[in-house]
Amino acid sequence: MKFPTRRRLFTSRRILKLLILIVCVSMIYLSFQLLSIRVLSNHAKKEDEFRKIADEINSVDVDWKMPEKKKYQKDENWPGDPVRGGIDGVPHKSSGVIIIKQTQRQTKRQMDKTKIQELSEKGVADQLQNNLAHKTKDLIQTPQGLGRGEMNTKNYQQSLEHKSVFIRGVLPKDQHLYTALPGNVFQCIHSKEKISYDFFNDDYCDCSDGSDEPSTSACSNSKFYCTFQLADMEPVSVTASKVNDGICDCCDGSDEWAGKTLDKDLKKDAQKHYSIYQAPCVDHCDDLRKLKQKQDAIKLMGARLKATYLQSANEHGKAADPVFGPQGVFFKLSLECFHYSAPHFDYTICPFKSAKQRERESTHSDVTIARGMVHWLSSQQGQYRIEMKDGDGFACPGGMRRSLVIDFSCGLDNIIQSVSESELCKYAAKFTTPAAC
Image (cartoon, rainbow, N blue to C red):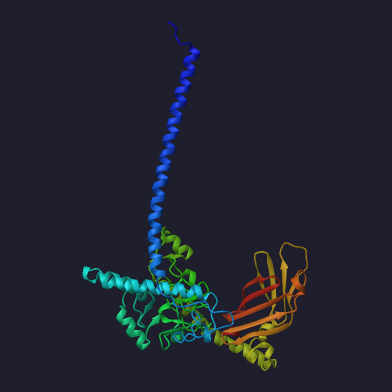
């Protein structure tokens, strides 16, 4: 009897291991195939569901066709509406896409109303009705300041009729521009386009100037004005992209009316240190009120000091000289030069005469950024601004010469608050003085 040699035994083991490996790989391959079939099956089911929804939306009769070039026909049902026929019947750019999207939105709203009627007997109609009215209650408030959820749809309709709705993100003086025109039409503020008032504040940008979405973040080119404003101060606003982003940009939190919160919270001390507050917002307008009181006190004291500036202009016969502003009140500033140190430069500004810049760690001579060519950009009370031109043209693009714009604001002393090079060879300075009070 012959026994297998060691070499044959070793070969048999290798073949056995190879067979086991092939079986394992085959099982893994089959598992992946089964998983892929299951995923494709689920995907096909979802695709069928989406197709059914799309078929329901697209089944609506739009009854509109893209007009031929240079042949415009005004739609009597939508006079002057750029979506369907444009202003005076001229079609708007991409109007075909817009009207289909608007029709889809209308269809969805109608479908929601139909669901309410169908489910009214099942006791869930109230919940769906609240979902429909949710946007309306959030985007509007009464002049008395009713907050979120304090106004029902019936009150909203009554307010529209009496034109007493206070729209979030709009200044009180501009509220009248956002009321519905006859025929339930809204006219865009700047572009003068006309759309259905149903599309106003619906979180979809219809007007090219963005004026139909003052309360939402839908239009990138629009502004949201905070509800809290201080009289005699520039209105406080934020860009539309910051509305309902979870960060309180307005001191009263009016830009976060939806109550959206961030996934990650900042620590309270960090929020206070960096002046970044997360929603839900808390009123932080006391600091602004205190600042306003302080500014009012400064203006009152500065108005008394201003008398010496008027007296100086009269003594030197400059009261009627328009170069030095109303009644020559800024003449006294032209008798002095003032200094300011920035991180890398030192500035010497002699208002109405000259301005120079010196690089601190350099052997180069001073650069003259402005000479005595003075032009008043604004001479109204509280908005005093001059431009001094004819500076050096060295290293300036296109043969231009350096210039300096000085903003004068009310203060108890003559102080340069800041100097910056806003653009290449264009400088800006902020200057406080009793002459501007």
